[in-house]
Length: 161
Image 1 (cartoon, rainbow, N blue to C red):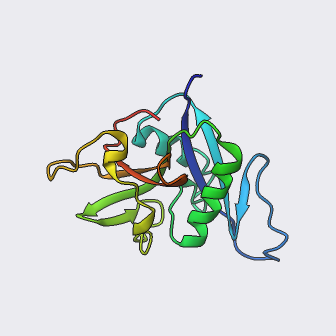
Image 2 (image 1 turned 90 degrees about the horizontal axis):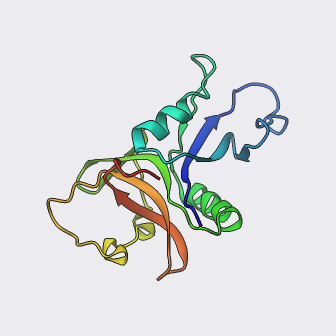
Image 3 (image 1 turned 45 degrees about the vertical axis):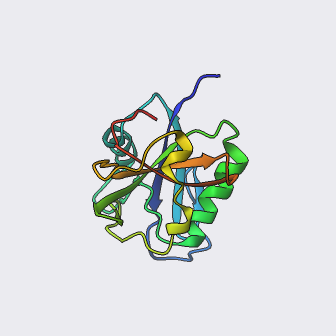
């Protein structure tokens, strides 16, 4: 079948009131105090995917952006969602960008991605070589047929997913 581009948008819920009463917009999925929208859209590069996510900002208080993966729990939430809802195993852009060698920073909230190294898939699984001059500074969620799990695959950001 046809592979569609995908983006993962995270939208921070506002503060105040009872946090259990906070609701996500229709077709969004809640995790802790954030809402996520998994968007299947025409193929997009990283910058265009981010622009689409940021379009959900309605005022200066809104923080909608590509998802910033800050913890194992958040990684597990996204992985479980994709296991249930993406049998085609598409690739999904997130906000993370490599600032220095092996230092990944979430562009959405400026946090550093820490303690998730074991969820990076080896590049050679997709027939690629690990070369020093490879500057794959963006991340997508990708499904590894070898390990049978979702994880991170570095990409150039110019690929349309």
